Amino acid sequence: MNSRILIIYEYQILYQILNEISEGLNFEITQFNSKDLKDLKYDPKNNYLIISKKKIEGIKNSLILENIPIKFEKLIEMININFLKNKFSDQSYINIGEYNLDLNSRKISHGNKSLNLTERETNLIIFIKDKKNVTIKELQKMVWDYSPDLETHTVETHIYRLRKKMKETFGNENFILNTSNGYSID
Image (tube, rainbow, N blue to C red; front, side):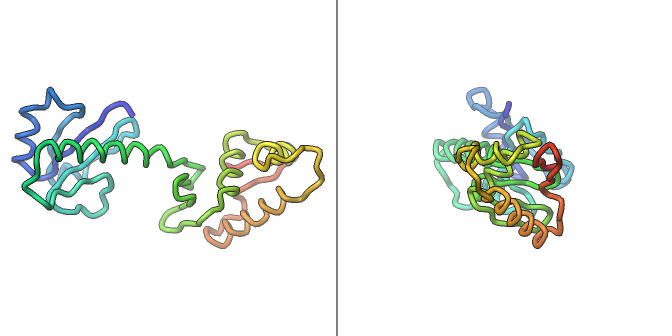
């Protein structure tokens, strides 16, 4: 992420204080009202943090200041910690077609549905997505750390179970495709 942007939501006095010392801060500052917030377009290159007095429905990456007064150093520390958390959280998500894979919680989601995955299923999905047209031998070696010469149906069994889970949760029978070139994910 290139820049860190602190959005101060309907908190005029805080905006004035931070704006006066903005040259000494390691983030940009802007202020929004409720209309501006509705029109906000998130840019994945930027790390946003919205600071306000109350919780804002449907908005992530927010810091609510309820316990005030607060020491200025503590406020800056809280802002910087939240920027770090946002960066870590954003790096844990991978888009796989129409799905989002959260590497931290090992959940794949689409819309309001989500599915818990095992560590092996997560690794399997990532490897197939990154490589495309992966053979069983490659999966045995790279995901399971088995010898490619080993005769086993472990890979096929895991893929079968994962396909079944995806179908039951999302109704998707074609999440992992098998062609003559190997397995792939669209």
